[in-house]
Image (cartoon, rainbow, N blue to C red; front, top):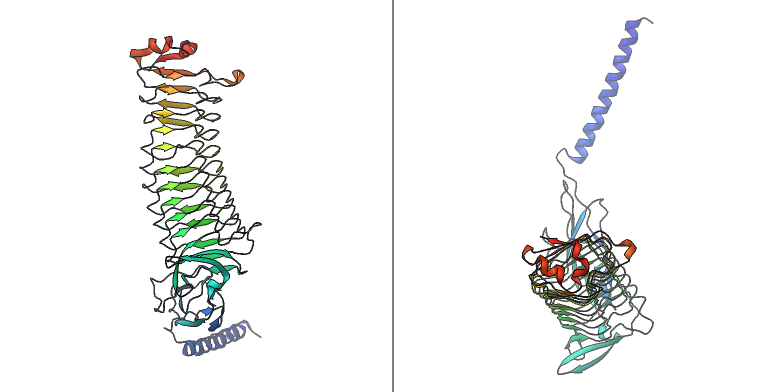
Length: 435
């Protein structure tokens, strides 16, 4: 066979292949339509429609990879403004969902109708007075619990009191929904619920009782209602996994040890309405790096941030004038503090702050008691603005003599000699210089 025939046969072969490919592509185009846009699959609900004899969580799924699901639970048609599905949601009588994806047509609307036949309040101990009901001990065994909005002849449920508390803690409950009728969550309501992952709290709750979420060790986040006014003592004590807290806009008080040893909590953003924080409120939150406590707070309570090892700066609270005993003791990451607006310091406020190297003290300081800067072995610069030397204790700046750094005390030029001659201050005479 000569070379020309070989090339002709190869060209013929490529032509046949190309023709077959073109014909095949043409059939595919006719079958799908050249301009046809794919449609997202219709979502599905995990529970079959029909009667339901207890509170449940419903999952919504879509077989189209990467689809976004939006849903409604009030009977309205879902659209681009409806909530985005991110996990199981409480069952409702009418549930609807759509799914969408960029470049695809949105799915048809899926609908599930449920007949809620249960009487949920029968799982609770309860008392009534004045036409209102307080729910007590929970005797059910579900992972998801929907607090009923009414009980016994339709009276509104307005308070929870030790609803889930057991001597050995509840280890089953994972999610709870608190209805809009409830205004008070009492003492120890969720205490010891070690499996609790989330709580949806109605917007009318105004107070959390003492120990309300004490030792809820699986709880990672909590969104508190906008109308909440007070958080009780030890409300979130030892919630080891708690990472984020949303406080709402009206909170006024945080109780004693409210967030004590919440080891995963990194940031605090309290509203301007916050007026008081209790003793040890955020003590030993070892991951806490930043805190903002608003403009209404006037004092840091005793031991408020003691042992917050990663707190790198003082909390943002511009109108605080008092720092009480041990408020920031052993906050190892603090390096500089400006106390220009502070008028009162308690005992051992910054004792043991290993990295603290620079301090500024304002005009209002008159007394610096025992251990305020004790065992601060990195402290090299103390800048003082009081025109009268504050009264100090022998142990105000005390520490291990072998670790004491060279330290300079800067004071106003006009009163340099007063500082150098004042009781106890004269011990540092050679280190006191004019500012």
